[in-house]
Length: 69
Image (tube, rainbow, N blue to C red; front, side):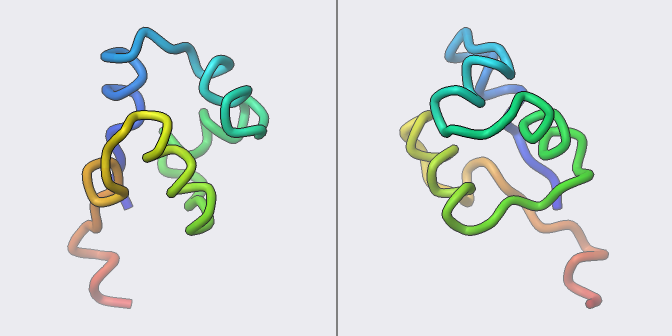
């Protein structure tokens, strides 16, 4: 799964640490999500989307390989 968190953070002028504090996770969690090493829970994805005032589908994108599972 791909995501545009880094782009959304840049638009909102937020660091990884800023976003992490807003949604009560570690900066390392944000980093892992951005790099595609960790898929967030539904609740966490909704919290991230809420911070940026967008829908979850505007931040997270399925890849072709995700559809094969």
